[in-house]
Image (cartoon, rainbow, N blue to C red; front, side):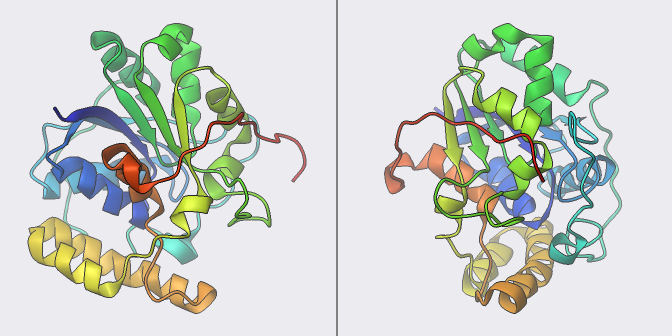
Amino acid sequence: MPYPIIFDTDPGVDDAQAIAIALRHPDIELLGLTTTYGNVDVETATHNALLLAQLAGRDDVPVAQGAAGPLVKPRHPAPAHIHGKNGLGDIELPAVTSQRDPRSAAQFIVDTVNARPGEITLVTVGPVGNLAAALQLDPALVNKVKRVVVMGGSIREGGNVTPVAEANMFNDPHAAQRVLTAGWPLTLVGLDVTHRCVLTQEHMNRIEAGQGALGQVLAESYAFYSDFYREFLGIDGCCPHDSCALAWLLRPELFTTAPGHLAIVTDGS
């Protein structure tokens, strides 16, 4: 049976790679995409999510727009030097013809989970404000989701924004604290995992060849993203951070998972 998921995202080149998996993998039932600011502003995130679903021939997948900024802190500028101003490597993009769901991301999450209690996994790969907002709307959500999978954080790896902070947690630490301590079943897939995964040009060539117009966008945006990794990190390829969250869901035997208490430092800079 396919895994029913809601995919919460801020696309973003590596988000686009993961969204493609969610849209096309036979073992995933994608119930919707919810968008947040992060790699781009939330309007651009929504545009990109709609576009990727359109290119995959999946206009049936709802896209609901969510958080435009953090709960408490000022919003940090989007990392255009990593993802491009348009989030997809500043490549030329086709027009979007579909419309977003009129509900907020938080309301979409609440409605969808309540329609199928105990079945749905929330996979979040950006700042987690939408999940925090959903908890505010329906605190009982913690007992209704099957699991939450978070791409974010770092246990022993160090950070990618500061020496200790990972970008998704750094962008909205107060939301992260609510989500990580809510009491629902949660798996954190952080930099300790994602920095050990590299998507090479050979991999991307194979993806492009089999995915039509969607593959072309993935390949062209990969070129921009991998240039950053090559120049600043000395990596021949890129780390597919967000795809790792789906990889854990689909193939958990490839990972070592350890139980533990999770918390976020919300003060300081």
